[in-house]
Length: 85
Image (cartoon, rainbow, N blue to C red; front, top):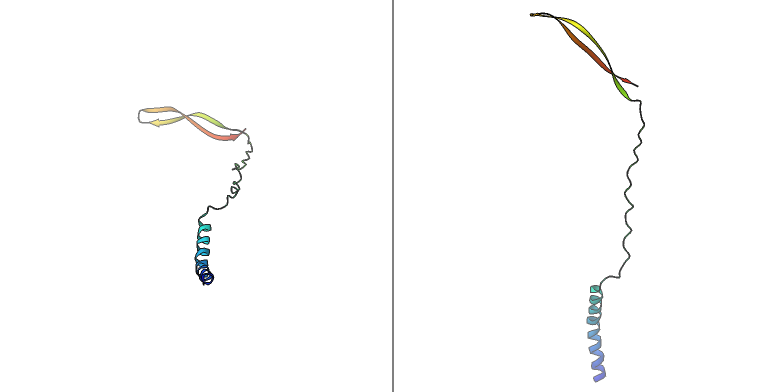
């Protein structure tokens, strides 16, 4: 009888032991995995600059007579525009 009793105890305890073994493996730390690949380094976008001829102002000036209540006045005038050089 002791052998049959031992077999019954083992049969009843086996599922509990298997469940405990699975639970214990779930708590172990995961196997160390290599670091994930790093993202590629940031590259700045390429900006192309095409030089243009410089611009400068061309001006024309003259004197103009303006009539005022105090009398006629010679008044300077000027017109300017941008020109490519």
